[in-house]
Each structure stands twice: as structure tokens, then as C-alpha cells.
Length: 286
Image (tube, rainbow, N blue to C red):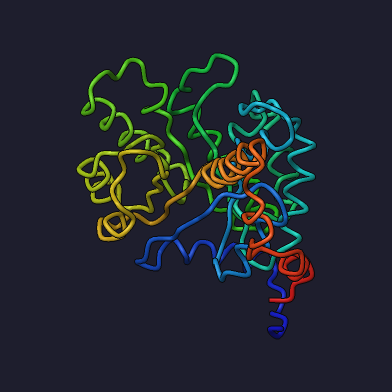
């Protein structure tokens, strides 16, 4: 059993999380949805973890898109952040707020859970359209101000949904130009990292890193360059989104199908993940 680590304060975790994005090395940031996943990654020496809104919603019986209640999200985040001694970043979608009046107390409640980073996206959940740049910049400035008032250097990963919802930008070049425009504006507003979700072309990723001059986040979807290439391009962070959950469900589905034909027993009895291993995770015996 390893010697217990000194518990870090929330601000110390925030500083560590910021530094991980400026180390010159690609930060692999897996996305989990519960304490067990958080404990697993901490035991494997991941320096930080993040939640995926889709995974949190799906595992609680809701579709993604702020359909799960904000109170439920807060309770889950508090459990996760309290279960590990490494920085936790939360995917908060659009902040579960329709306006700044709602957003301000939501950010305070999110910080009270112990998280040190957020993903905030620029999609209007009511219309499913991209919000105007200045509107999103105002939200980023508000979030930064609230965090400063609470004494936490909250890391803002500003997600731009141009590649997902930019219907008016119908060529790769137009999408890139709009993403870059938003990246520059969000950076000026106080964002710490830019997340052009859906950007996959190597040449676009390279240009974004070079021209934006701030940490850039890429998600693991089909078409992106290999991780070592992303590292060479200067990408600061790679997220998995709901990929861990999909992989877990795939394994469960495959075994369930085997069992229907009276096969798969060895998959169960020879599984290296034992009850003792899981108990050690939750009891911090690593």
C-alpha cells in the first residue's frame, strides 16, 4: 500500500491543472462519470480527470443535453471531486442556465463541489443554435469573475460548436475561420483553453495551435491524427468524451450475447479485475 498523499487544496489543484496544460506535453484527459472511474484513473497515476456530460446523463437514465437535473449533476460532481486527490474538470454543457442571472449562482454551486475546471459550450440549448460570440464572451467573463471572487483559479475550456452546428459555414475553410475567430474572442474574454469540438483535419489542428497561441483541446473521434502526432503538433489536451462508457457498454454487450448461447464463462472467471481489486480502489489501497 502506497503512503497516503498530502491532500491538496482546491486552489492547489487548480494551479496544478493549469500547469498540466502548459507542460509542453499532451495531456490525456479521460472522461468518467462516477467515483469508481475516478479512483481507477488516480490509481493509474493520471494527473487529472474530467467528467463527460453524456456519460453522466446516460448512466443516470437521461439523454445528453441538460436533461438530467442540475442538482443531480452537483451531487455527482461533489462525490467525484471528494473521492480523489487530483484535479477534476466538469463538463457543464451550457451551464444549465438560460441567462447570466442563472449562470452566476450555478458557477458558485459548481465551485463548491470541489472541481477546478469546466467545459462551457456555445450552443443555446433552447434553439440548438450557436450563440453570438459576444454573448459567449460575456458568459466567460462572468464565470471568471465569480471564480476570482471565490478564490479559485477556475480553468475554463471554451468549447466552440462550429463543426457540430455551424450550418452557415459550409466549407472546411469557413468552419476553420469561424472557429479561429471564436477562439481568439474567447481567449480575450479569459478562457484558458479552446475546444473546437469536431475539428479533425491535421492541417486545421496545426493552424489552430499556431495561430491561436493558447492550449487547444481535441476529442477522440474518427479522423483525428494519432495521439503522438497531436503531441508533436502542440495540442495541449485530448478528451475522450463518452468513449470510456461506450467501451464499457461494448464489453458488457459482447459478454451478454455470449451468455445467451451458454458461452463466456471464462470471461467471467478469468477476469483480472477481481472484487478485491475494486475494493482496493475504493479503499485507496494503491
